[in-house]
Each structure stands twice: as C-alpha cells, then as structure tokens.
Amino acid sequence: MTKQTKQQTKIKSGIEGLDQLTYGGLPSGKSYLISGEPGTGKTILSLQFILEGLKNNEKTIYISIDEKPEHVINDANALGWDLQHYLQNETLNIIDITNYFGSSKDKEGNTIDSKIIVSKITDFIKSINPTRIVIDPIAPLILSDNSIPDVIEYIRSLIFEVESIKNCTTLLTSYIPVGSNKVSFFGIEEFASSGIIHLKLHPHNNKRIRTISIRKMRGTQIDLSEYSFEILPNRGIVLRQAL
Ligand SMILES: Nc1ncnc2c1ncn2[C@@H]1O[C@H](COP(=O)(O)OP(=O)(O)OP(=O)(O)O)[C@@H](O)[C@H]1O
Ligand SMILES: [Mg+2]
Image 1 (tube, rainbow, N blue to C red):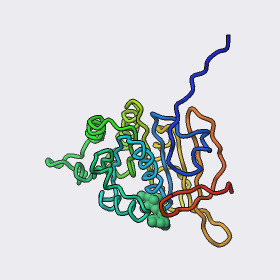
Image 2: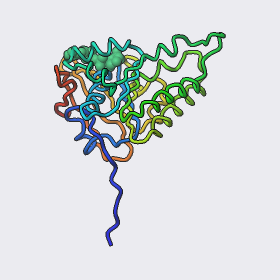
Image 3: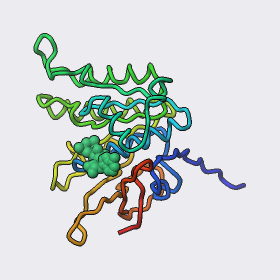
Image 4: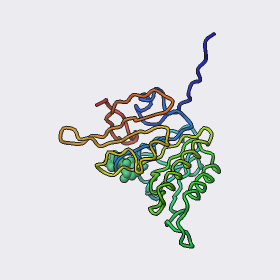
C-alpha cells in the first residue's frame, strides 16, 4: 500500500513570477514577513497580495500603521488599481490603527500593554473573518517604552493569533534600517513568522536594481536565488531573472 502524504494547500501570492519560487504559492494559513529597507516595495507587494484575494471575492483586511488609509488608496490608484468597488462591498477593510493607538499612553498616563493591542487587533480581525490580512508594518505598533520581554510577547502572540484564524494568510511588513544587515526591525519577527520574503535595492553596474528573495518558508521547498524585479503600471511587482 502506498503511503499518502498530506499536500500543503497553497494560495496565489498575486505577484507575477513569485509563486514559482515556492513551487505553487504561499502555504495557506500562515504568516509571512515581508522585509526591506524604505522604498523597497513592501507596501506594493502587500497590495498585490490583497488584490489577488479581492479578485476571487475573498474578504481581506489591510491594517495600515504608517500611512492613512486614503494614502494607501492613492498609492494603489497610482499603480492603476481602483479599490473603491472593494471598499464599498466590504471585501476590503482598510484599518487606520492610529485611531486605536494615537499615543503610547492611555488616558491615565500608563503605557499601553502589548496584550491589549493584540487583543484589540484580533477581536477586530475575528469580526471580519478574512482570508488575507496585511499588517504594514508590524514594528511601530510596538511602543518605544515597552520592555524587550513585552516586545517579544507582543510579536509572538500577534503571530500566534493570526495563524490560529482558519484559512487566513497574513503578510507582516518589517522595516529594516538603511545599511543594516538585519532581516527585521527587532530581530524577533523572522523567528516567529513562517516565512521571510526579503526585498532589496542592490548595487549593480553603478546603479541599483530591485531584488526579491525568499529566505525561509516553512512547509515547502523554495528557490533560494535572488531575482531582480520591476514595478510596472497595472502589474505592480514583476519578477525578472535570477542574479
Ligand atoms: N505608481 C508607481 N509606479 C512605479 N513605481 C512606483 C509607483 N509607486 C511607487 N513606486 C516605486 O516603488 C517604490 C516602493 O514603494 P513602497 O511604498 O512599496 O515601498 P515600501 O518598502 O513600502 O517603503 P516604506 O518602507 O517607506 O513604507 C517607491 O519608492 C517607488 O520608487
Ligand atoms: Mg510601505
């Protein structure tokens, strides 16, 4: 008798050329870190991931931390993506987190506990029951006066909570300081998440090219090569050749 192996369900990333690198898409139900220095394409990649779900009538949540929702909508418009229809039929929910956490202190002047942040986010997510979530980016949710154990607890519990939502795949973007060798802001996110997609601006013949590579992806074979990519109108990030 042949032994049956359980195939991992994979979903389309929405990024042209990326799914070949993971042999058929992102393993579903997990959370993935999209890391890169400023301007490397984290937000555009995240929008493409959300749009792929929207095309299939999936419910999606885009939690915008640094940018107001209208800026996210304008960024998408500039690339030729009109989000209005999806906002109206509520398959796309763009959340401005600053409405929840405008300051690191509550009304009584106490530092807001990371557990409260995670529980507010997860309560909201569960009320929508989405199949795709983006948190862009994850780091500023951690307030500067939170202690290191609190930061670790926040990241681990946030990732645990989003991965426990059935059939929901999450992208967490992580800002990396310019010139640093780090993979994520706190150095914790990469261990807690199920995969890492790394975006770079690479020096190449006196100019810089955009590159993308997969650093890890639990549960699937990956192509570890670094690929150049372009950002094109209507298509967004499009992978080209391996370096
Ligand atoms: N409409 C567009 N057409 C072509 N290229 C664009 C367009 N909009 C943005 N870009 C390019 O894409 C780059 C990446 O943008 P994106 O906002 O995704 O970066 P990011 O990694 O999210 O940056 P940050 O860390 O500042 O949030 C921009 O710096 C710009 O060069
Ligand atoms: Mg961004």
